[in-house]
Image (tube, rainbow, N blue to C red):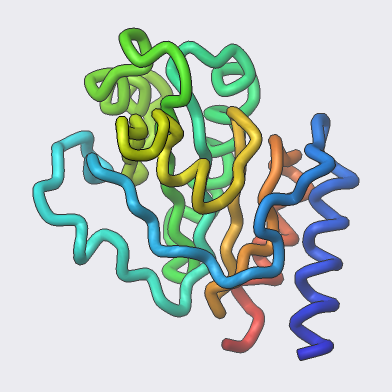
Length: 189
């Protein structure tokens, strides 16, 4: 357990030190990642998925999630370019899965479901993408934000192969994240 704790702490500190913006609240850092409760999903080609059961089975993989909104300037200047660079770099790597989720906590008319495939196409991102608009039952707060205690957008969540959240914060530097992600991928399960 000490080794896992050191790995999580080391990875988090590495990314925090290279992050241009960093949250003081690391969300659920170090905890087991909750199941993603995202009501709408699109495959990597932008086609709507009716059944996400196969989509969400990534046991034994590192998972990198970008939470975003279509009207978020930081998402366009940093979040999407970083996701593009990292997902392109690890394109043929079977040990990592990239996702994007539009977490709509404001501007519901602008940050709509149809913006998800449109935004992914704009950046040439070939990653499964979700739309989490919240509901009247969750006080309008998206499930992803509630479950992972995210702090806005662009927000990055990185989950280790063992299912623990090892990063939960704003933006990462893609050049420094590449070797950190490689270490996570190569880490024994």
